[in-house]
Length: 144
Image (cartoon, rainbow, N blue to C red):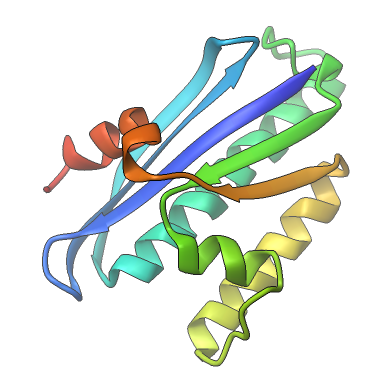
């Protein structure tokens, strides 16, 4: 079973008031979503914070499942696929683009730690904005 997660982040101004959103699907059925304000940030900060929020949600759900207090059927998930319309973030997380910004390096370290805690195969893929509609809609419900 594959968990497909779409994330997005946006900023009204760069930097400016920013928000993040994401949605996860198993077999085409929505199993979680989130949206929240992150204050003043850049577009890149928002994209990374959306990915981190999704990873934290998955990690905490896995912990709850191990403790038998969660009804979501994550225990059968064998792989997680992330989709984002941020080509820069996807290529940096995949290690294809060099990361020079110190804050982005910190985000990458957080992501790597969460990946280890989740302990499942995880892939990252760029998708055009038209294929990231639901996550984009969640972001826009906050500020944009």
